[in-house]
Length: 424
Image (cartoon, one colour):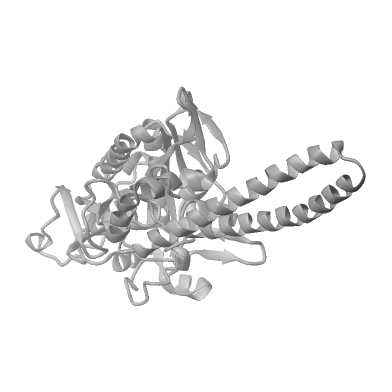
């Protein structure tokens, strides 16, 4: 949520941000009107309450007809106070509902555009020349089937479209990635967490996932709980309604959890394989820090993602995400796109977002330092999304005979296994 003071002191900044996001600029004026109505309602209520207290003092001293008249006025005033309180509650609700529609203020330097506008910051590694090696690269589904490690037909039979089974060598590959990611998280200074994957509406709404992303969220109405699409949600809500001493910051958590996504808007997209699925496992980094340190922490998270991907030998690019594709909570976002040989292009495999104070305001998370109590900043970043990392490992490390060489960094986690071999 935005700081209400910004609405009064610099509404043009919010208008510019809304325009960059492709969101309603008119919402700013509508919210300014609602804010004034809210403050007017509060002022009217407080005026009546002051009169009510004054009358109470007068009644205590009055006698006879004067006291009778004052008591009658007190009763009428009590009704007016209740009505004024109702007006305040209604005005507060209207104002809050409007404020919750705003996305975070787009950060300085964020490029303008939407989902299809890709701003490449850097390219790391060189894709293999499969033509020079004399064979056409298979896609990850075909490789997985040769390894008897990815079973989509039975995933569909059991759970429906966009579900899958990992088995045998490929299942072992995921377990190796999990353990490797855990070790890297510890090396990077993160506290490992296994968070709940069912959360209350307050946690989902507080992190901004019931706004633009609501169509992709799974909801269990009988329990009034949501399945999370990322460990970011429970990790953000972990300190909700708390005040953290600034001396403890930054707090660094790495959460491992399944991620559930309806992919409601992706009909017909990436229907083959396990690139765009309804469930996958993921290690997510999450940071609480001072607002003035958030930009530096964002670069730090990106550095960890780059180091992790590079350590697995995957060619990749770093993208500065355009303003219209940031999502509700992010002020700035960097994505890493890994090379997918069968598609001849780079595809998203990790993402890191600087959410500044936006989520903290919604979740009631504050810090206490020498300047008093104020909101802190939150950031998140993908350390390893298992399904997509498996895709780029299988495709980039495939051999002509259908085998797959294992990245050296994973050898210790596979009992020294260096090659995944076809079994069918």
